[in-house]
Length: 204
Ligand code: GAR
Image 1: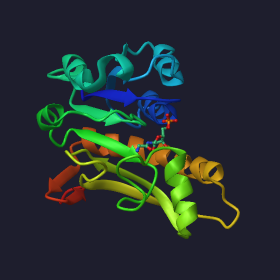
Image 2: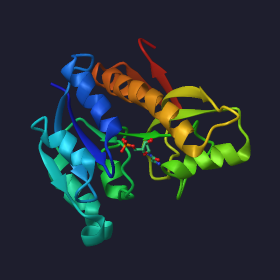
Image 3: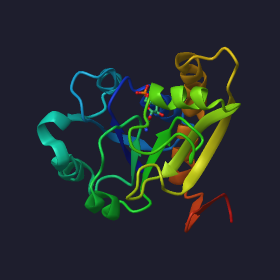
Image 4: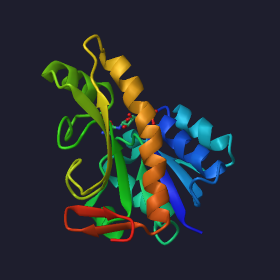
């Protein structure tokens, strides 16, 4: 069976969307590990309550060596690493070993409002401040850059005139919870082909 590890740093609602998709058999895979770079985050409770193995590699303790710890848990053991709100930077070594086997979800339409320092509410505030009429979310492969890897799926979300970062975040999250499990499903089924920056879904 296709095996995944999910990396988290926060509340883990994106993780929950994958757990739910596995439980409902929408996605045929097994979540082998949930790894957090912060202790005491709610994502860990979500995993533990389902009997999923959890690991904490506190970024304050491990710093740049966090990728080595992640490799010990994942190398040769999982087919895919999913970054679900994970905020530490991964090493080039890990990214090379898991080439085209790490995906990330970002709460905007990449290449807008992404890159270093762009995470969580900051992304939505930047979209509102810029005045865009549409934002959304993106699932992409992880390469050596920040949010620069090839795009797998995107979903558009309208920005409303009275939106705050919080209200926009809420509506974008609802879409994240659809496209993230969908991306995992497509990858688990072998339906994703990558050719440079272009990603083809289905029998192409
Ligand atoms: C999600 O909105 C995810 O897209 C974002 O963090 C949130 C995690 O929420 N990721 C980034 O901003 C990465 N640059 P969650 O902990 O409830 O899943």
